[in-house]
Image (cartoon, rainbow, N blue to C red; front, top):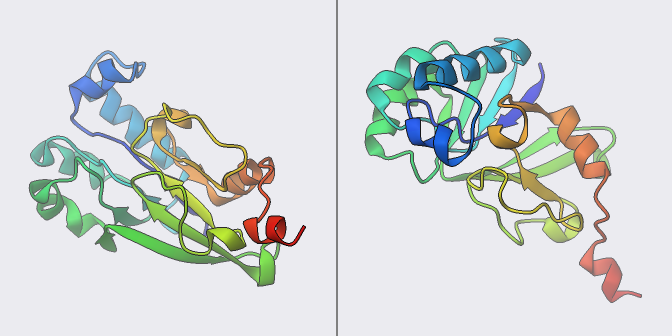
Length: 187
């Protein structure tokens, strides 16, 4: 079982193609490509944390969401209004506003990697001073990445319209120059 992260699919949202210069000629092509890209990396045994903004029109989105592989967990975004939630929540293990997860990882301190998941970028989060990570969406790649922060945008606009694996997240985080503020205080 692998773990993936993604955000900002915006199924059925024609304007997201224009506003974010997504390389698709129609909503149908856009939505089909997102499903194909997702399923090209995610199997039905994998876990996917989706960090918000699933669909613009819930009635048309169900046909796409039901095709997505994996066990899906949904962090609600600003476009995920009650009608979107009520029509699509059946395809997800849970729907939350924010979540803190722990992944067992021998490379992490004490073998546990703590990650805060939210639709929005934050400057600090639980255990951020101890090296916990933060993954978010919402900004569509327009928020500059901070090499001194253990957070970044996992949205489709940043990752070739495909979910990003935990292993790839680890690679990206390993390139950061973060130092704990606790260490800075002791020097």
